[in-house]
Image 1 (cartoon, rainbow over the protein chains, first blue to last red):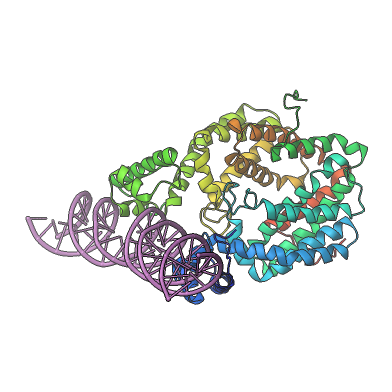
Image 2 (tube, helix red, strand yellow):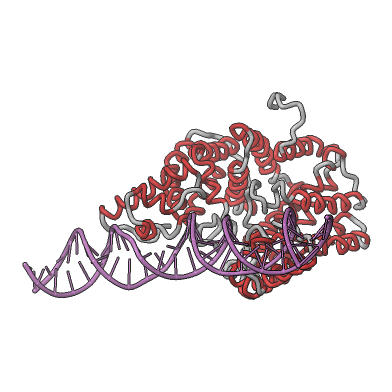
Length: 234
Length: 234
DNA sequence: GTGACTATTTGAACATGTTCAAGAATGCCT
DNA sequence: AGGCATTCTTGAACATGTTCAAATAGTCAC
């Protein structure tokens, strides 16, 4: 998500300098209080250079996030390799992220402001699909190696549901003003226990009607309904 | 949520003129494409006058929302008076809102952008507590007159949960690009059926452990934990 | 009417995100 | 070396949200 892919080492160096200086300033003064003029000055370039490499102020944060995804991939692979059950695997993924982003919690708020799926920086947008799909991929792996039998109909949706669950948690965490975000920690522990229990219960024959309802709901929400759109209301 | 409460009829007139003209322009051109200079010009006042009455461009939308709450109150009272069961009562409340805001769906997006609870325009902020509590009050009424037995521990939280459910739905609706937001309609129907079923099931003895878990979770999320903060993990 | 005080209105100025035409630097080919 | 194309850099200018000192209008008491 940057404006001009540098084709030279010199350009790459300038881009990285701008990115690093911006992140420094964001951490020191906050995203909102840092101006692009501040960034350009610290990087020792002209204001226009910042815009040559980054489409907008927000896009700098996206640059950070994209790099984070690259950094995190090996960490997540390792975490998954070391965790056995579904609970531990999902927990490991989310913890790895909370740890990685701990020093930049405030900065994450600049990303979380983009709810509109049409905004290029939104977690739900077409432009960020690549990041999203890779992230969801880790949850797929968590489910696959989680030693819990998940019914096929739910299994198709579960990685994305877990991803949404994670996004909700991260959002709560970003704005959690409790000491060391302990509220998020507690919420995480308890909610994950419930989520995993519900997943385990989902294959019970007793749960089938509810499960059908829920998967149907997810299809609607994702805009991925199957052909029975004229199905009569039950 | 306006900056200067008008003490004169003249001031009140000017404020309303600015508000009406702004809303016109927001509907015609969209919130983002409308400038405060556009607003001032259409209202026939100076740019500074707009800021004398409204703290910011966003605050104009909040002015609209506050007025909507006033408009909606009698509608919601009537809707509740005409609906009998919990499902119908909650449905009536949410439908009334979807209907009222139908012509201004895009404009609602300007409000929904404020996730940060510390932002004065956020649905979760201290500044909007008054609006929030009144809205939650309607859900309390829906629960009270809904002819469903709700266990006491859950009952304390249910109006707020239903309010959150509604906010999620409205958010989905704001960004729903399907024809006539039919996806929202389907999601609403199905999800409300599930929500009401879960509420009905909540008083079963079988559900007590889960219910305890969930109410505990809600307490954490709201930052309203009771004294057993040192409770050992089970 | 005058003076004091308050409320309202004004528009130039400011702050900051963003744009863009022009110039400089670099690399390749003849 | 010169010419050309591409990339990078610049900073003035623009757009728009916002501020604020000064001017104007209105009210009340004397």
